[in-house]
Image (tube, rainbow, N blue to C red; front, side):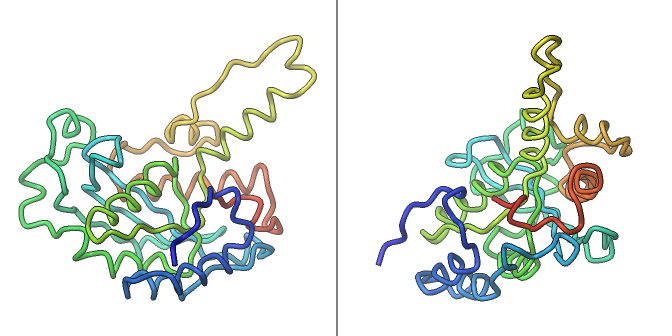
Length: 240
């Protein structure tokens, strides 16, 4: 039985979708991940356990490049649980390129004896299972994990995510729809992580470290919810 091709906005019931994925998956690690399920889409944000996730990669093309570093941290609306944070260097499936080293600062010596993705996959999935994953620009974390797993054992992965970059994009779009903007259009603001954080007076962190960026993403979502949503907001309003 083949898996239908859904876009994420067509998935109206993530609980049922993950249950179906568990039945169709051939890999025991993915089956266990999907079996943990997710929240009902009407669950209040105040009742959600989140985990912020960030990847550094060897490039920007998920079909050709691979994950080189993973960082994650658990949090809720009140706290970020730094003691539960995890990070890994990953031996990439393609070659480490000089231009990517300039960006993330990860060198060949950092990757000496680093495990490949399969060796950390079970632990990674255990950290994510049953939580709501939060990222800043889901086309990196979602597409790279899916593509890298397909390259390793011919089966990808999908699960709901909250994308703080998409939230910023939606907020800016909403502001530009206002009647006052017809007469004096507001300039488009950057929705990159650091620039988005600055609008909420969050501190500046060094960029391109997976764990630091995961913590920065967690803080950004907390601020976005405080200023634009409510602890009573249903998770279906934010996840994709």
